[in-house]
Length: 304
Image 1 (tube, rainbow, N blue to C red):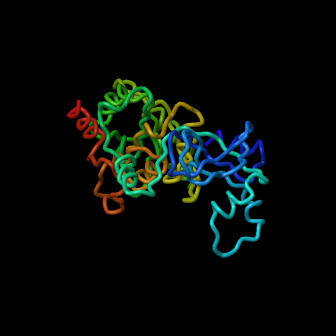
Image 2 (cartoon, rainbow, N blue to C red):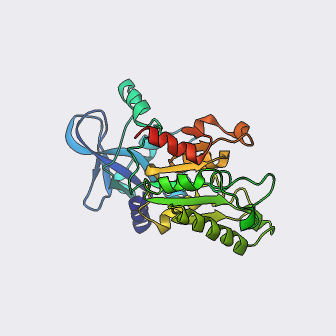
Image 3 (cartoon, rainbow, N blue to C red):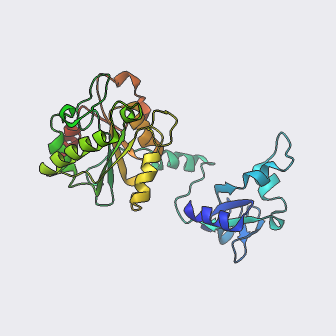
């Protein structure tokens, strides 16, 4: 949507639409634009050899929209988009990507297949894939009802070092995403946290694996945009590494917040099941369940 945002900001448009180019259609109404992308008209449904249709994604100037006197019931398309469209600051940006309209049974059934969250397959990852790992409960042993305050308290889970070494050969990037509220509470310093992470990375590297980066949130506010399950740390990672594609990402964690975080960015989710958190997990947020990171690697090897 960055292209759309650029058009919206540059033109100060009332509304910017994502347009989808189509060939030989009569099911959709066409959208006519001029050379600048300004929308001149919405044509009725009829057969056309080619044209652009409304892709159903909009950037709306909220202030201009709410400033109008709308009735309690109105049609966004006919009463706003189509009515006197040539006299309004409406623009369109062509997005020739995946599109489906589930208005007929055939396409509705197709969407059930196309949009299904498929399980992870060993032949999928390559250097374009990213593996996101939670820390506590995935890489190291959880400290009951407390925080890991120093490297002496950081205990690797059994098989973790070998597992990360194996995963390092499958994924282009491996990034740790962790909530660390102990710092925000003043129970430990950020320097303590960084020392723990230096110790963790050093041991992983000695075992033949790697961690490419670590993003952490120290806020005590559950509504903070960086605190899982909010996806702020994912966006920070993507800002630093623009090649990260969330549709080619896997999130491994042991808590509900990890699974929801994965869903929020569109990643595949792998739950490391623990007795401590098993009753808090929504099964609909989980693609694969394992009892350890090492077991996850074993499942991948079985599929080679």
